[in-house]
Length: 66
Image (cartoon, rainbow, N blue to C red; front, side, top):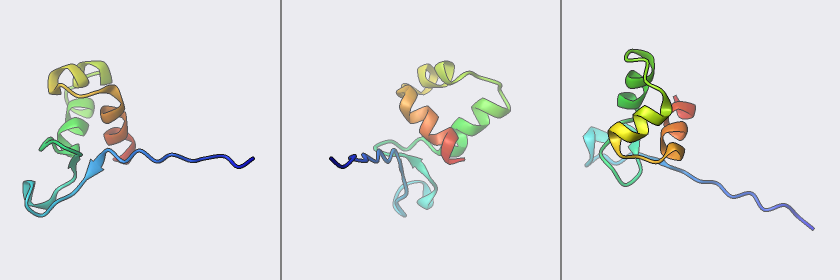
C-alpha cells in the first residue's frame, strides 16, 4: 500500500492581483501583511485569522512560506 501525499497550496501569485505579490489564494491579502502582523504587531495566528477573516490553515501556510 502506497501513501498518498496531498498538497494544499494556499499561496498564489497573479500579475493582475497586487502586482504579482504573493497572496492568500482566493483573496487579495498579501503574505507580507500576515508576516507584519505576526512580527511587528506581535499578533497570534488566532488573532491574525480573526482580523483578516482567514482560516488558521491559511495563516500558518503564509507564515511557513515566509
